[in-house]
Length: 81
Ligand SMILES: [Zn+2]
Image 1 (tube, helix red, strand yellow):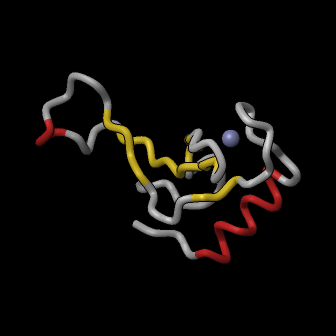
Image 2: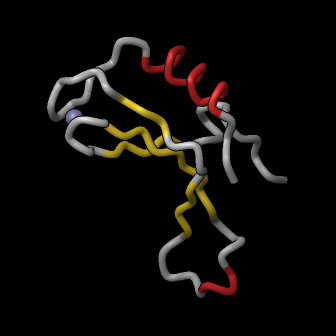
Protein backbone atom coordinates (compact mmCIF):
# COMPACT_ATOMS: atom_id res chain seq x y z
CA UNK A 1 0.00 0.00 0.00
CA UNK A 2 1.20 3.47 -0.85
CA UNK A 3 0.13 6.78 0.59
CA UNK A 4 0.01 9.78 -1.69
CA UNK A 5 2.82 12.32 -1.62
CA UNK A 6 0.48 15.17 -0.59
CA UNK A 7 -0.68 13.25 2.48
CA UNK A 8 2.91 12.35 3.34
CA UNK A 9 4.02 15.98 3.09
CA UNK A 10 1.11 17.16 5.24
CA UNK A 11 1.94 14.58 7.90
CA UNK A 12 5.60 15.59 8.04
CA UNK A 13 4.73 19.28 8.20
CA UNK A 14 2.07 18.91 10.92
CA UNK A 15 3.66 16.27 13.14
CA UNK A 16 7.40 16.77 12.67
CA UNK A 17 7.61 20.43 11.76
CA UNK A 18 11.17 21.64 12.17
CA UNK A 19 12.38 18.35 13.65
CA UNK A 20 15.95 17.33 13.06
CA UNK A 21 17.58 13.93 12.83
CA UNK A 22 18.51 12.63 16.32
CA UNK A 23 21.80 11.27 14.93
CA UNK A 24 23.28 13.90 12.59
CA UNK A 25 20.99 16.86 13.49
CA UNK A 26 20.25 17.76 9.87
CA UNK A 27 16.71 18.61 8.80
CA UNK A 28 16.48 16.46 5.69
CA UNK A 29 13.78 14.05 6.86
CA UNK A 30 11.75 12.29 4.19
CA UNK A 31 8.76 10.00 4.50
CA UNK A 32 8.40 6.70 2.66
CA UNK A 33 5.34 6.43 0.48
CA UNK A 34 4.94 2.66 0.84
CA UNK A 35 3.39 1.50 4.10
CA UNK A 36 5.28 -1.42 5.64
CA UNK A 37 4.07 -3.85 8.25
CA UNK A 38 5.49 -5.78 11.16
CA UNK A 39 3.99 -9.13 11.96
CA UNK A 40 3.79 -10.70 15.40
CA UNK A 41 6.90 -12.77 16.09
CA UNK A 42 6.45 -16.53 16.35
CA UNK A 43 3.20 -16.66 14.37
CA UNK A 44 3.37 -18.89 11.26
CA UNK A 45 3.43 -16.96 7.97
CA UNK A 46 0.07 -18.36 6.90
CA UNK A 47 -1.55 -16.97 10.06
CA UNK A 48 -0.14 -13.45 9.85
CA UNK A 49 -3.48 -11.70 9.69
CA UNK A 50 -3.70 -11.92 13.48
CA UNK A 51 -1.48 -9.04 14.56
CA UNK A 52 -0.08 -6.61 12.03
CA UNK A 53 1.22 -3.12 12.69
CA UNK A 54 1.30 -0.83 9.64
CA UNK A 55 4.35 1.43 9.62
CA UNK A 56 5.65 4.35 7.66
CA UNK A 57 9.36 5.07 7.56
CA UNK A 58 10.79 8.51 8.23
CA UNK A 59 14.33 8.52 6.91
CA UNK A 60 17.15 11.01 7.28
CA UNK A 61 18.34 11.79 3.78
CA UNK A 62 21.78 12.67 5.12
CA UNK A 63 22.84 9.79 7.40
CA UNK A 64 20.20 7.17 6.54
CA UNK A 65 18.72 6.77 10.02
CA UNK A 66 15.22 5.29 9.71
CA UNK A 67 12.46 5.79 12.27
CA UNK A 68 9.16 3.95 12.06
CA UNK A 69 5.78 5.48 12.89
CA UNK A 70 2.54 3.57 13.44
CA UNK A 71 0.52 4.60 10.37
CA UNK A 72 -2.84 4.17 12.12
CA UNK A 73 -1.89 6.32 15.11
CA UNK A 74 -0.47 8.91 12.74
CA UNK A 75 -3.79 9.06 10.89
CA UNK A 76 -2.23 8.09 7.59
CA UNK A 77 -4.11 4.81 7.11
CA UNK A 78 -7.40 3.62 8.53
CA UNK A 79 -7.52 0.64 10.86
CA UNK A 80 -8.81 -2.51 9.16
CA UNK A 81 -11.89 -3.94 10.84
ZN1 LIG B 1 20.67 11.95 10.06
